[in-house]
Image (cartoon, rainbow, N blue to C red; front, side, top):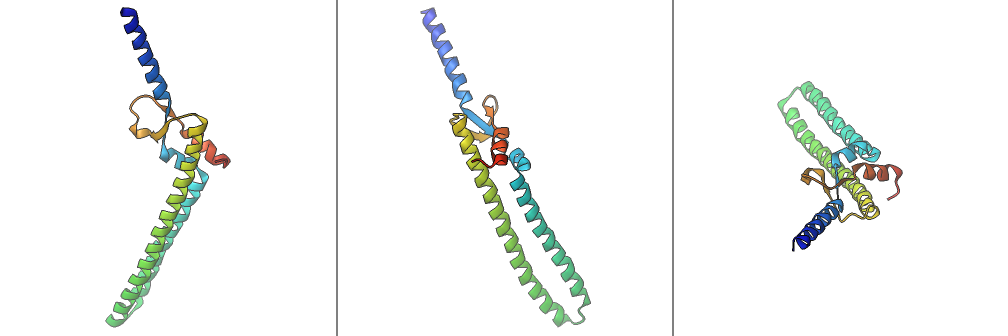
Length: 147
């Protein structure tokens, strides 16, 4: 009976280790920071945001040059509409770039999942103990463009 208990305990421990090895985890932020396409996307969005800030600075200078309350009111209304349109365009650009980056990272992660024979890939913040960090494998896959 003791031998059976020992054998069962060993089998359970081995299966637990096997299951732990089938889960990969990634540090999404690390991947984004090391992925040139993601870096370019961030720079593009940041450039648009800076252009929007510059737009407001220029409009503020123009506003100060106006001399009548009616001109100022019309200018404010026109500027508010223009700003809203530019802000909406910036949000659409940001969303589109985030989706493109996410889709590419997800595709690379799926390929690593298959290549490494993993059952799942989760965010590293969920892991307390165990699992396999595949962040660098995903980064390499993204850099080579073979996914």
